[in-house]
Length: 389
Ligand code: FAD
Ligand code: DHB
Image (cartoon, rainbow, N blue to C red; front, top):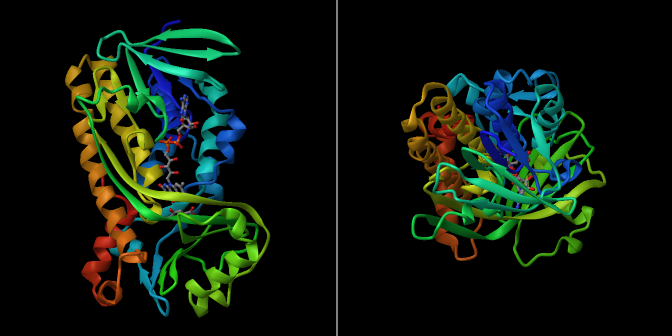
């Protein structure tokens, strides 16, 4: 079989890119290792920047997001006692959209039929071949039968553990990594949120985040050492810890309920350079990971898709080879800025094992400075709503 672009991975980046290419009349096919329901069962991001909302608008797939998503014009940092509100709308004129990654993925998945986007689920043993040539191809196994698809480009949207990045020879690529000594324990519950805006808290006992999916569904996180096991965290223990870390005002409004989902995700900063080699482009978590503190991962995947689609359009519609050559540098410029913001906010809001009383005082002084400085708040707001693409 032959197509113009093979996309590996049907997470948000693969589906966004697939829809974008089909909208422009470019032939493509998406290969996904898992089943559709499995992809939808992964509870992840909740905060969308304008770049992600804008892509859904361009695709004409924004109706449910506009109806059910919650536009937020501010969020809060907490230092264990008080809330420091960051007025993102007042400081930047922009807002963010609280809408779950699961819902966004569902909207993209459900539109595949009507938009003529073919996704092969349960594609096993996906392997990339001849990526340094102009005629790369992908092999995979479906229902026990080996298949081959020839294409002009392969786009790796297969997350951090997928095969695409690993297909780039070590001699031409380099990864930059920072692994953090803690993970985020997340809990999802059908209870009203404790606050109408998000709260990121740095308490003596550690980090906590109060987020939401709707007026009746809450998402909370606390940081825990990587040695912790989820079985040791009963729902009650999580709620008790959240009530302490979020501070008395928020705690007074926490409604407890049984967890619909509870899991621990490790934190990592990672960037792979370059994001293109030969006829292979990387998008999203396949090329980079940010710690979730800045809510940037999914949004970076969306900005990569924006640049990758632009490059493909340049190549297929305007015979512009430079468009492909420029992809990596364009995408990486924005990636590194988001990495910086996510790392800075992670350092500000978490207790690291090596930190002593001095580092704690530094965090509190910085939070106090942010509380008193519009310039500091503006810088945080500008990054949180997302830098321009
Ligand atoms: P993925 O979502 O990982 O999708 C990759 C796809 O490729 C998967 O479906 C996978 O099954 C498939 N795949 C893998 N290997 C193969 C293979 N061999 N063959 C075929 N297919 C394969 N981001 C934000 O912007 N805001 C947030 O608020 C936020 N919160 C987060 C909270 C948590 C707890 C976590 C874990 C992440 C959070 N993120 C957030 C990050 C965000 O979820 C990711 O950045 C996003 O999922 C990246 O999308 P992707 O499509 O690039 O990768
Ligand atoms: C959520 C996740 C994040 O990483 C974040 O910074 C904000 C919200 C969430 O899942 O709701």
